[in-house]
Length: 342
Picture 1: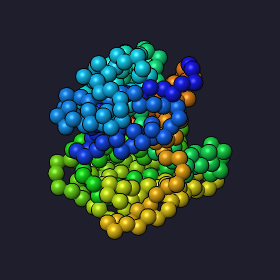
Picture 2: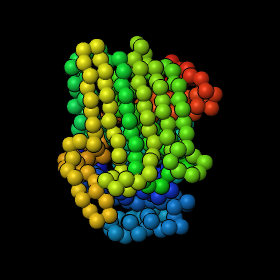
Picture 3: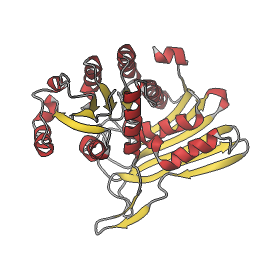
Picture 4: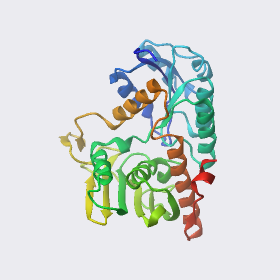
């Protein structure tokens, strides 16, 4: 592939949360600052077209607004499609982009169920194109250092990981916070251990907010080779020292045969005090920027990405099993890797 910047189509402005727009809040700024990419078009879905978000953004960026999202996929200037469509259309949009010959970056989660993830993974394998789920928290510098330390044997053989991922304030997701936020700590735990989960025992509850969906989940995971992990994930009430919908707790404790490693992914950071709130800002390459580095390297080298559809599938299997376990009150076994990949 030539050294030219890869053309990007921004497709959709929806997420799992009612006020989520990761396309404009996260991916557009990252694409705009990355020398390897250039936004060349914008497309919205029928559900999002009423707000005219796509047309307004296209005019602001000075790029074409596709008449329909499928028309946007036929543009020869587009190499990569950044997909942030509503959950009900996500599988259709991702598979259509892949079959149109476009590489894909997909906002989390790749799909809401393991069955849907398998469908996407099959098309990605069939086309040989990059399908990168946005598991960007694994690229946090503190987590990257932890991955290197564990791989280098600093704690010996890891036997347990404790993960806490709590967001303060913001609007709860109608899909539940396990589906909305769980992908991040689960993906990091899988990266840290390198071991597939075999059994899930979970408790899911609505604790902080009114409404039908869960906002707090506790997962007890048993991995291959006797490794275990515990993941707490959810949303709490707003805090004065945390920006709205910002991370209040993001930490990991990795216990091994020769030591313990504590990782606080809220550090290092610069405290920023505003009239409305106090927050923390990381000065350096963002996790999304690092994710785009992975995307660019995979596309230009003609190889698959890591994370990829298989990673998203295993996370979805764990979430599916957690819901089944919470409903039944007993642990749920997961399929082996061959069954899970079909």
